[in-house]
Image (cartoon, rainbow, N blue to C red; front, side, top):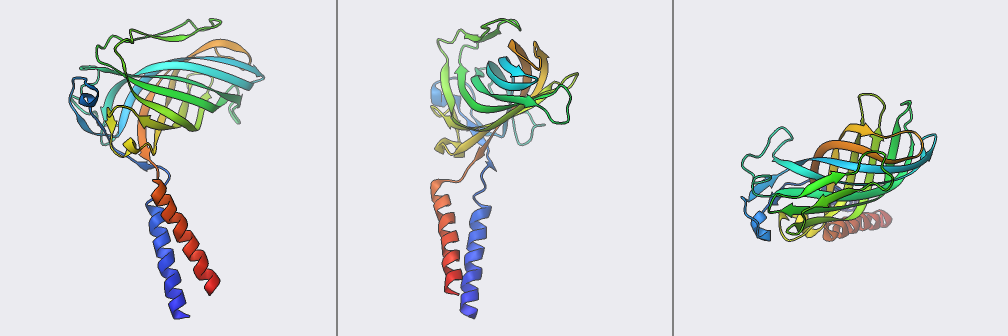
Length: 266
């Protein structure tokens, strides 16, 4: 009986240890290496956050705030930060040696925000992102005026630009639009695969999450009903997190199975 209890305690301890090391999204520090893609600029060994600003156009079909939407947008990244959001990495090369920008599309459903009169919550069912480096720093981002039927967000002067990352799956995403001075916020979690070695570290294995988190600084052309090309300007930050490798998940599953066997033997 005592031996059985000891074996059970050992299995529980191993299981708890495995679980503590295989959280779904552990904070991850990444490295930025322009030289890996043939671009001039210093290597930045430690980056926790990347600031960005963006513009997007949203089309909505809704009745009393409930319906569907689609969105397209693009934005530039402005600085790297480490170890906290308050700490800008100096002399990093971004916007000095190269530009870093992203292009995205998304779609999903909208509904009135509970407890916020006039507010809307958008839930993404699809989201796609591509990250590019522009060595010549001449890329432009242009959005059609708010309310334009068939409006677009276009990216120009891209002939020399290099793809350095892209999303492979949407994990979750939600944004909020509020009336008045508080224009809303957003948070989107994506599986992101680095391309070409510009971004490296634990995320290079493709088992990683990119989190886009920020606020809407202005909303133009929005309503609770149907509209074309409602414009959103916003800013925020991108951070990365690692997820368990398949071998870790297999060990976790084995620990659970072993614990079950010991219980049955008792």
